[in-house]
Image 1 (cartoon, rainbow, N blue to C red):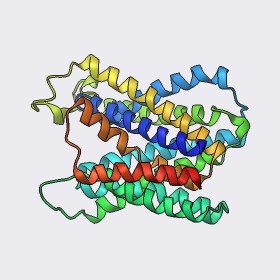
Image 2: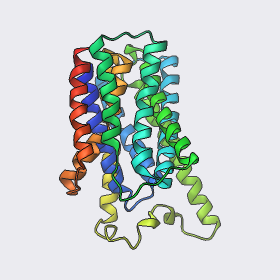
Image 3: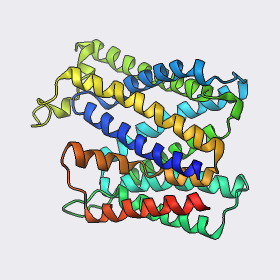
Amino acid sequence: MLAAILALTGALVYGSADFLGGLAAKRLRSIVVTAVAAASGLALLCVLLPFIGGTWDPVDVAWGALAGVFGVLALVLLYACLAIGPMSILAPLTAVVSAIAPMLWGLLVGGEALSTVGYAGLAVALVAVVLVGFVPGTGVTRPTVQGLLMAIGSGAAIGAFVIAIDHTSPDSGVVPLVVGRATSATITLAIVGAIAFGAVRRGRRAASVIVNESAVGREDAPSMRPSRAWMFAVACGVVDAGANTMLLLALRVGDLSIVSALTAMYPAGTIVLAAVVLRERIAAVQWVGLSLALAAGVMLALA
């Protein structure tokens, strides 16, 4: 039961981080938001490390670094596929794949076994993931093959991140998360630096790569000061690092299949915050998904 509670809570926290990151991306480029979030999350984990502790075993460090690479790959593919659209199909597809990949790994490779209620809970969880992540639109647009492949790739990378963290030993504490964040921060900051260098060579100011140019002229862009965008990006990393810690704890005490299914419900946190803070309407299908998510959480807690 503890694993289910931690995983479901972590999913809501992940969704909150995505919400903060989305706000920051209204004024800052997505890659810049990702780099800042990676750095701030790393800072939080470094603060927690002396209190939680952990051994620096080479194997655990390697798994942590690999998780960091998968994390960056997941975000890059996610942003790319959502930019292509349609989000109503690609967003839930990413979430479903992110749940199925580690579920299958845990059940088929890890030898995990669940009760009848547990398997039913996994099925309900997958349906909930689709409905919660569904973004209603005015028209139906078929996704391109490229968009589908990117969504599947993003979901697989998220699943691989979870699997990598699950392979670390209990004695490692938060060390794998620290290593993963350090890897993510290094990669994303290097990408931002390369983009800035390219901009300078083309005669532009390096600072020009920071601003989200697509937001210029939109009604919502001028309402946010740049300082607030930076604050949201920093908060995104801190909250996301907290979610990673909950994921780690859930994997320590529970099965990979259950934890991955509940963690994939992260869009729920984003939806709830968007409704409360931005007054966005929650569609009827998403209410059904949220209800099923709670039901799946109870079923998996009893598994």
